[in-house]
Amino acid sequence: MTDQTGQTGQTRRTWWRAAGTAAVVAAALTATVTPSVAAPAETRPAPVTAADVDYDTWQRDCRAVMAAALPYLKERIADSAPGEKQAIVLDIDNTSLETDFGFSYPQPANRPVLEAAEYAQEHGVALFFVTARPGIIEAPTGWNLAHAGYESSGLHVRGFLDLFRDVAEYKTEQRAEIEAKGYTIIANIGNSATDLSGGHAERTFKLPDYDGQLS
Image (tube, rainbow, N blue to C red; front, side, top):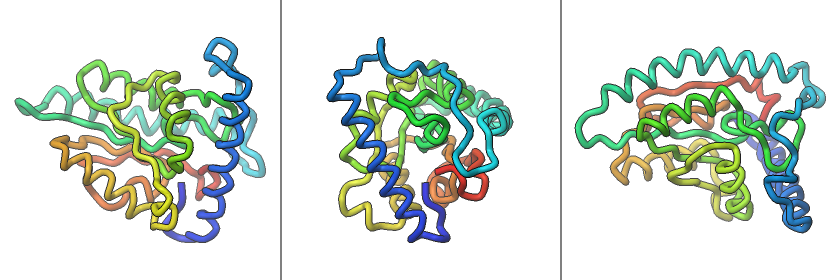
C-alpha cells in the first residue's frame, strides 16, 4: 500500500506491483493452473529483497499485533447488539495475503490474520477486503482470497479513475459505503497508514510495514 508521504514514489511502486501481479495471473491462467498444482502455501518464502526484514521476523511481528486484536474481537463479537451486522475490513497485500515474501500465485494467507478472520467468520462477522489493487485483477484476487481460506462478503478494488486518487481517501470512502449498507465495522486491519486513516471503524490494528519496506 502507499503511504501518505512520498505519494509519487509509492504510486510508481503500486503500478509495478499491479503489473507484476497481472503478469503472474496471466501466466497462471494460460497454464490453466488449478489449486491442486499451484504453488503450495506452506512453501517457506525467501527474505524481502533489498530489505533487512526476513519472513520469521515479519510473522513474529504480525502475530504480536493479532495477539492483541483477537481478544478484542472475541469480546466485541460477544457483545453484539440485537440485529447488529458486524464487519471487519482488511487490506490484502502483506495483510491478508503474503505478498512480498516469495511472490507466487496463489499467494498464501498471512496466518495470524487468517486465524482471527476464521474466528470472526465462524461467529457471523462479515469480511470486507479494501485494496489498492486495480480492478483488472479483481477475479483472480477474489479466487486467491477464497483459496487461502477467507470468506469474502465484498472485495473493493480500484477502478481506472481511482488509480489517480489518494489511496487513503479512496479506502475511507469504501469503508463509508460498507457502513451505508448497515454494517458496523468493528475492526480495520492493514499495514499502512493509508489503510487505517479516515475513521469509519471502531478499532484499527496496524501490522508492520517497516517504514514502507513492505507494500
